[in-house]
Length: 317
Image (tube, rainbow, N blue to C red; front, side, top):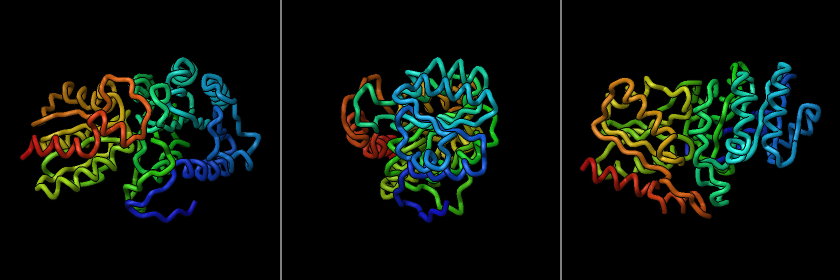
């Protein structure tokens, strides 16, 4: 898959998924792709490998149950659908059919956070909290569309289930130069260096944090952006390094403020007696958000670029 993109370009994460599964399907004859009627990007795979493609219709529990059965026969299964229904409607199948048996099922979900525009029923506010609580589950939140390819290739050699969270997956910002990309399980990445504070973030919020840091640079505040794209297992070494070097910490995520990355980092602080100079979390409060775009919702609930800038100006100046 030849894609030439540079930092700041926008590209469809769903297209990357479609191209990558097609590429992997040619190399791995035990790769199956399944979807609960969310398979527009999977058309190439369906055409090329129809005997290893399953669309169960709008039935997420059935889809993950079928994936578990196929994985028990020695196959690797990629399931693509909408996050709220993969993580909640099919919770028992994920936990008991897949995680309990430590099966090679990769769950790729779109609509992370408040990006779906579909209101409370379609917002994915709790998915990271749910998925990271399951034994054997590895949890990713994708910030860069090209990261998807790297993680999917890596997943072919990994034993156990994975959950990969995307935003809309239609227009995603490239955050890393292609020749500098190196992603792995249990790792994070520095999207922007800085010495005065660190923003820990994931998914679409990495780009938002970067924009905020660029604005703060003009205010004389140098902010580091740490992309915690692997939330479980989390990169504890990177967290400790950032706290030691910058002191001040903000966790920014398009997820409920409690239960997601901020809670993971807080647990690490308590368990390891790590004490930052300041600590703040910004994300979705305890509300069921209504209809609206991601930018509209972030502004409404106080975790957009302006909120980040205002917090650091108040705290560090």
